[in-house]
Amino acid sequence: MSKQLSAIPLHAVVVWALLIAPVSAEVFRWLDPQGQVQFGDRPPPGARQVEPMDIDLGQRINPDVDAAQRVERLRQVAEELERARLERESARAAAAQAVRQAASLCAQYRDRARLLADDGVSWIKGRNPDGSNIYYSAAEVARLRVEAARGVQTYCR
Image 1 (tube, rainbow, N blue to C red):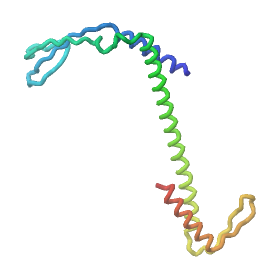
Image 2: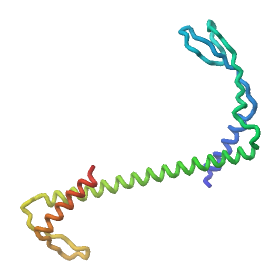
Image 3: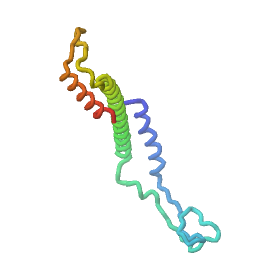
Image 4: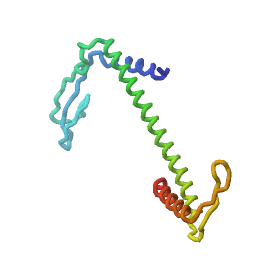
């Protein structure tokens, strides 16, 4: 577990501890001069139909759940979020690599297509992987042209 990941639950516990304290906030509901319903902790002067609304923010916390369970759940959530972040980063990196590879193949197929574009070429000379010369016939040149065009269509979008 990374140093940063282990710090996340500690911050979450501090925030959680502040939130579990029973808190009551007085909220008011009123109509503004345009007749729109507004809410706030203090109605402005001249507000109409002001109604206090007692909201107990402590209701959001389930008192039946043990504090240790809450801390454990926060730790699990932090780990899940970290795992999801790492997966997103990995997916972005893989997508960027795929784009770079497609761009490289596009350039290779475009170069090949440009070299083979002259219809007057009836044969060409190339190199085998071992470095020896290889000569392509007119039929093989035609096949290489089709292959290059297909590569350009596939990788140059």
